[in-house]
Image (cartoon, rainbow, N blue to C red; front, side, top):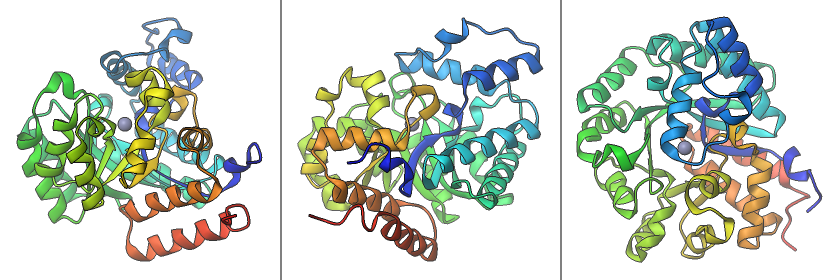
Amino acid sequence: MAPGALRLLPKVELHVHLEGSFTLERIKELARVAGESLPEPAEALFDVRDLATFLHRLDWWCGLVRSEEEAEAQAHGFASWLGGEGVAYAEVTVNPTHWSGLPRPALLRAVDAGFSRAAGEGGADCRVVVSLLRSQSGEEALGLVRELEREMPPRVVGLGVDGNEASAGWTGPRLAPAFRAAASLGLGLTAHAGESSGPEGVRSALDDLGVSRIDHGVRAVEEPGLVARLAREGRTLNVCLTSNVRLLFGDLAGHPLASLVAAGVPVTINTDDPLLLGTTMAKELELAASVCGWEAGDLLAATGVAVEAAFCTEPEREVLRHLLLAGWDSWAQPG
Ligand SMILES: [Zn+2]
């Protein structure tokens, strides 16, 4: 593969967080405007190795965003950056609990506006997956969905849940009514599981929450019967290699991506928190190619899995299929 070629090809991403879209420069600027000092030296802010610390940091810097203009600018800047990385379409997770400086409807309106402005300028076409926090009560979760029912920003396409399963415990039954209500509104359903939880978290996401996708899900590999079920039922795992190496496995050699692919599980390749982790979609696809021995045609196929699992409308999916084939055409011909 020619170096840098992947960066230019149209790509699709389903597992990426707006909370992880900040640069250090942007954080320093927001802190200055908010009149707050950094809790650590700037160069240490992104050096996180455990999920609990990571989530705590997200709360702090997202909380620096205190106006709709700042939130709009964050969304616009990120969608523009993704576009520059060749991402044609992305479903961006936004968890309003991290953004303590803005009321939830104002945040979602501002993000929607920022994404629309970027798309109009040739940036990535970004949609929003609104995410619950694992530790929220069932009532709070249902409250968010009722709020979306009253005011649904046009780019919202799904409901998810993220946060630390290890500390929040068994949450599937508690959040199930919110997921059922979201499904009745036509939203796609996804859940972080099988990262800070084991196979039982993945099973709960499937059985209690009824999701069609799992964000991470990689620890399903610990239970062969569950891997077979994911393959049989065509539930997609949105895998993030760099993130998993940093927070879970320690090195790429221990990552189960190749086993999951070999078992027939639909898998997509994603960045999770690209600016914070110093990664891009092109880098993640290159890593996946090295782990699985993929050639160009396999990378196109993995991108195609993301198109099929996206929460967009069927006409939009058809447009994405054509976009991918046209963009990858000469580069990814088999043989
Ligand atoms: Zn994630």
